[in-house]
Length: 66
Image (cartoon, rainbow, N blue to C red; front, side, top):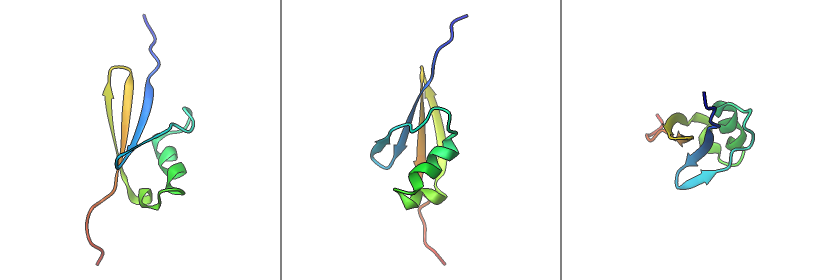
């Protein structure tokens, strides 16, 4: 049996965000970056695995208030 470490890549808009701590969940990472990017507070999280990389994308909802 071979154990492979999965790397996490976080995407928001056209940016790649660094993984602040491998022990943090994706929700915790979103909360961590929401201080710098307030629109992440209500963002959706999608994950896609390719090989040994998990790409986590934060997507903000598009729409109008009211």
